Image: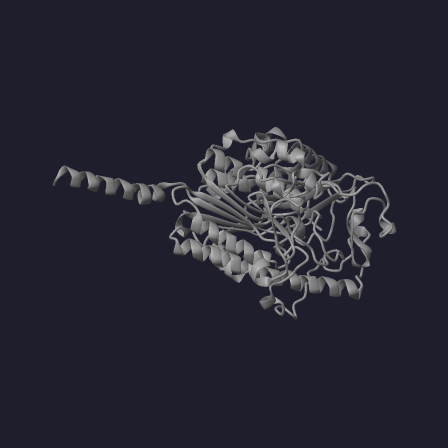
Length: 525
C-alpha cells in the first residue's frame, strides 16, 4: 500500500475514533426537569402518564424524596447549591429574603453544581425556564445578568407565567405575548430544549436543566387541554377539611368546615393544575424521543422532580405550600440512566440537597472538593448501597415572610400575614417559622418539629401509625425522647458540608439511634 494511502487510512481511522470512540467513552449526559409546586401526596403524578412510563418505569422511583424548605426560592437554591437554607441563606421568595439577590450572586451563585460542571468537568450547560423568583429584578442586575455556569441561558424573568412574560436569552430581553403557537411557555421550553440538542457540540457531554412553570399558578392550560378533568375533585383524604386542633397557631386559625366557595375554588384550581401538567408530559416525551433519535438516550441520565409539594384543602387550608407536612415537603423523584435497572422503587430518604452531589458524581467530579451538605445517591440507583449506609433523617427548615405589622385583610391571625386565599385563610406569617427532623428508617417513620413563636410549639408525628399526620403526639411521649430529638435537631441546624452528610456518624456522636429510641416508648396515636 502506498505511503500516502496508508497515511490517509490512518487519518480516517483516527477521525472515526475521535468522533465515535471518544463519544462512547465520554461522561454521561444529564437532564434535570424541575417542575413548580408539583405534589406527590395528592395525586400530582396522575396526569403524567408518559413521564411515569418514560422515566419512572425505565428507571427508579423514590417514594421518600423531600425538600429542605417547602417554598420555591429556598428549595431551588438548595437544589443548585446542595445546601440547607441555613447555609445558602435564601429564606423566602423575596429579594430581602436573599432570593436571587446581589448577596446570593456574590456568595453562592458561582459555586452551584452547574458552575462546577462547566468550569471543572467540561460540560456544556443549558438552562431554560424559571430560575429563582426574583431573577431579573432591576436591583439584582436585571435580565442582563446571566448566572455563572451556563453555556446557553433562557431564563424567565421572576415568577411562573404561561403567557405575557419576558425571557433573558443569554442576557438579552425577549418579550412574549399571548399567542399559543409562539408564546405558551411550557411548549416554548420544549422547543428551545430540542434546538439545543440539535445545535450543541457532539464532542462534549451536556447538562440540561429545564424548568417549566406548571403546575404553579396562574394554572393556564394549553388550549387543547382546557376541557380535561372536568369532573375531577381534589382528593378527600382523612386530613381534608379537618380542623388541626393540636397543631401550630397558623393551622388552628383555619375555618372548619371550609365554606362552599373555598371548596369550589380549590377543586377548580386542582383541575387547572392537572391540565397544565399535560403539557409537561408532552415536554418530557419530546425530549426523550429526541435523545432516542440522536442515539444519546442510553448515555443520558434524566431526572424528574419538583421544588416543593402543595396542599388543596388539607387541615382546611384551601391552597398553598409552606407547611411542614408531607403534602408540602414530599416531592416526586424519578431517574433513568446508564446502569439503572428499570421498574425500581426505593424507600430510602433522598432530598433536593442531594441532586447536585449526585449529578456531580455522575460527571466524575470529586465531591470532597465541594462544600455541599447533600450526598450522592448514585450508588443507590446503581444498587451499590443499602439502607445501612445511608442517612436516616433530614432537616426541613422554613422562615416565614412578612413583618410585625398587622394585615387588615386577616385581623384574627395576628401580625405579619403575607398572603391570603379565599375566606381569609392566610398561609404565611413572619412567625410561621420552624425546623423539623424527618426520620425514615427501617424501624421508624417520624417527624419532630419546633416553632420559633411565642408558644415555642412542638409537633411530633408517627407516620407509621398516622400517615396523614392527624394527631400531634408531642405531649404523650417521654421527656427524654423529646430531648434527644431536640438535640438532633440542633445538630442538624448547625451542620455544614461533611457534618451534614456523613452517614450514620451522628448515631454514636450524638447518641441518637432511632432503633433504640423507639423501643423505649409506644408510637401510638
